[in-house]
Length: 175
Image 1: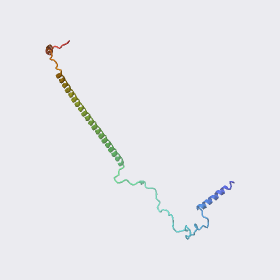
Image 2: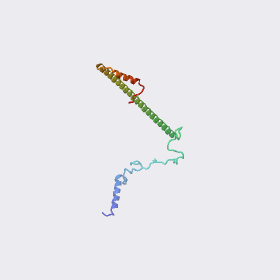
Image 3: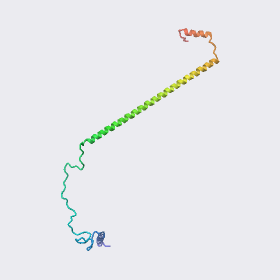
Image 4: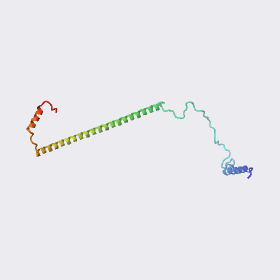
């Protein structure tokens, strides 16, 4: 295909495409040409203006103009900082109260455990004393029973004199 025909073909394809799409009207088409009497879809010239230029042209806004509403009455510029500071103090006070409450609860729990351990130790000590007393009573009864079953002879007289002398002698025996 020679290069000289290619631009011609492209132009023809463009015209055919615009015709099919409705961008171009064929002369004598009644749909678009109705005359001024309203015979077609679009009426001819009319006295109604579709768009009119606004009467007032707005200039630049004044210097103090803002695009947000004015602050409410009684508003201070530093109010948000004061609010942040107040909330911080309240949070800090709450955290301190919570720490105090936890510390008091831990102290109370430690005291309760200490008292419980003290009571347990007292009970155990009393139980040991009762057991020791019961063993002494049992040993004493057993000794008394042995004494009744097997009475010991009376100590000899010479031993009695030796014991009496030892009790009355102020000098210690240094053998």
